[in-house]
Length: 123
Length: 347
Image (cartoon, rainbow over all chains, first blue to last red):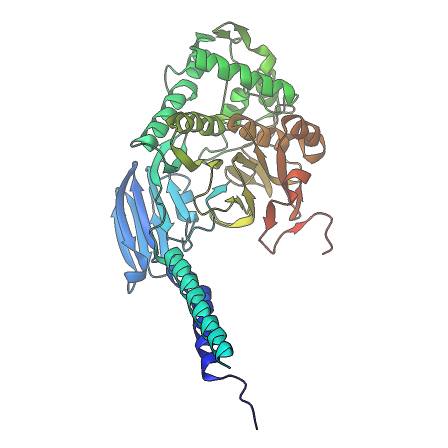
C-alpha cells in the first residue's frame, strides 16, 4: 500500500506554522516603513508636514524666502537667499532622516518615516 | 491505536497554539504604536539643534533647547556681552561659576592636546575668514602676526576672572557644539524620567540612555565627498558623544588647492595633511568635539596617545579614501560606502 507523505491531520499542523512563518517574514517590512513625510521646521516650529507618498507630481511651496519642491521622489530646497547655499547643494532628500538646513533662514527640511535606520549623522 | 490518535490531536493543538502565539507576537510588533519621542528643532551656534527624547516630563525638549541657548549667550563670539565677546573686546571678564568651570576644562584640553586644540585661534579665524563671499589666502606677514596672537597660555585665570593680552581673540567654535550636547545631557539627566535621547548640535551627537527599539544607537559618519546625507559608515553604539571635524563643510578652493576652516595653531594655515575627516567617540561632549579638531590637526599617529589618555576612539578618513579605525571602535563601526576601504584590507 502506497503511503501518503502528509496526512490530512499533518496539514493542520504544517499549514498554520507555514502561514505564521511567512507573516513573520513579511509583516515587519510591510508595516514599519510607513508613509514618507517631509517635515518643514521654520524657526523651531513645524510649518508643514507633507505626505510625499500621496503626491502625484512635483509641487513647489515657499516658506519665508526659501522655495522647496516636494515630489513622490522626495523633497529639495530649490532656492534660498542664504550666501553659501548649503541647503540647495544638499540636493534631493529621499531617505528617512535625510535633512537639509538653511541656518540663515532658520529652516529645516527633514524626511520622516516610521522606520529608523540611522539615529543621527556626525559631520 | 486510540493512543496514537490522541497524541496526534495533541500535537495539532500544540502546533496551532504555537502558530497563534507567534502570529500574536508578530502582529503586536508590526501594529502596536511605536514609542513616539518628544522632539524639538531649533538653531544655536550657527547650526541646527535637533533633540529627540524618549520618556521625560512635559517640556523637557524646550528645557534642553533653553539650556543650549543659555550656553550660546555665554560663549558665542557673535553675541554681544557674552563672556567670550567681553574677553575679545575688553581683554577681561568676570564670569559665573559655570563659565569658569568650562574655561578650566577647555584650557586643560588645550594643554593635554599639546595646543592642537586651541581656543585662541580667533585672530587666525578672522584673518582667513573661510566662510567669506570672496575668501583669499592672506599675506604671510599677516598670518605670522595672527599666529603671534595665538596660544592658550596667553589666557590668565584668577578664580572667576579671566584676561588676555590685547589682540588675542577667543573662539570656541571647535568645542561649542560638544558643550551644547553636554548641556542637554545635564538637563535630560536631571529630569529623571528620560529613558533615551538623541541630540544633534550641528554634527556633534549625544546618544543618551537606551534606544527604545532595543538595539544600539546608529550614528552615521558623513561621506566627506558626498552630500549632507551620504555616509561613509555607521557606528552602532551605546550611550556616548560623537563629533566629527573635516575639511568638507567650510572651505574655499583657489588654484586647485583646498583651504578648509580648521586652522593649525602651529603654523597658522588651514590643515592639509591628507585627512578628510576625523570622528571621535568618547564619554564627554566638549571632549569629543575638541579631540576631533585636535586629531584632525595632529594626524593619526600623534593622536593615538591622546585618544588613549581620554579613553576615546576615532575614525580617520584619508584623501585616498582609506579609513583607519582605532581598536575600541573596530567592532562598532561598519563601512557602508563602497568608495572607501579599511586600511590594511586588500583592494
